[in-house]
Image 1 (cartoon, helix red, strand yellow):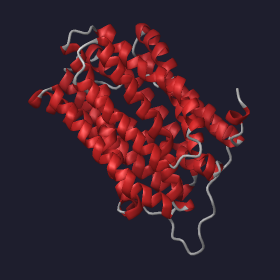
Image 2 (tube, rainbow, N blue to C red; image 1 turned 30 degrees about the vertical axis):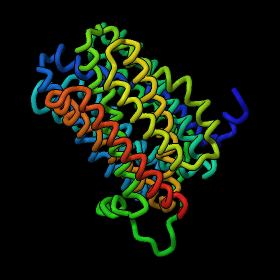
Image 3 (cartoon, helix red, strand yellow; image 1 turned 90 degrees about the vertical axis):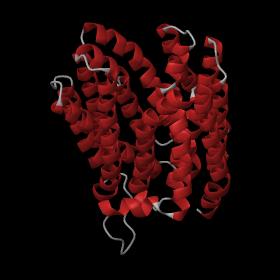
Length: 391
């Protein structure tokens, strides 16, 4: 392991280890559709509604987590949110079908409130010049853990779906333990005369002229990116690919990220965030065009590989840009706004993509996605570029 890799602050690596442990148990979302349809005998449409409730809860969690991070501190927010999330996930596995199961899905989304606290804490402890690299390595830990979780989750699911929820809860508590035992509070001192953060502050943050263009561009990009997982499998099956083929293509996403991300963050260490975000939009747009004309396993795999490269790019540059423009005592709220952007895209993408696919066909849907990425690229080259220069 290179000195450059290890040169980041010790506090960052504490969070890295905690998040890796947490993602080792990221079973529930991966296997939730099968749990709902096979264990509870939900229809696919009803299962989709439950998954949408998770997305709705994530919207609430992003706002709540951003506010709590700035109001009560990074460490306290992570601890409360992770312990609460672990309890909800454990209960989720035993919730009966109906309203209680729907409530558990919603609260599981709210439990993701620790996300803004983690990204704000990284912004606190890592020097500005190293943040893109730090966020890239942090996202690498997420995907390294997720890749392992996919294998472990399949083995646990064969023993019973309840074990998935127990394992997810245990690893979430693992993150809580690491933070409680090793990570000190990192929140900067509030500016003199600054007011305490308010839950009503989120709309003002979203409307910040330096920030609004970035959020809009990322929302467009993320809606297209998520189609690779919620709509592309339908296209693959329609062209004769087996379920095993679909799984292999999905697994390629994690493999590309785990292999490419460490090299990418080193190569782009001194690049401006807006340039990397524009590159990400171009890559996701190119992937959409490839999938629009894909007919074979190899063609769909190429599309997944290219969209994964786009993910590698925006996963490091986007939170680094947010940290760059956010006031030090409002980093949680700004990172929460970006999490809100992710949650909104996660709600819209599974509804819009399949609807366009059914109405217009796959080629037209993916060309619309490519056009959305082109618009995102233009916004990053203009508005995001100016915002980064203004600081």
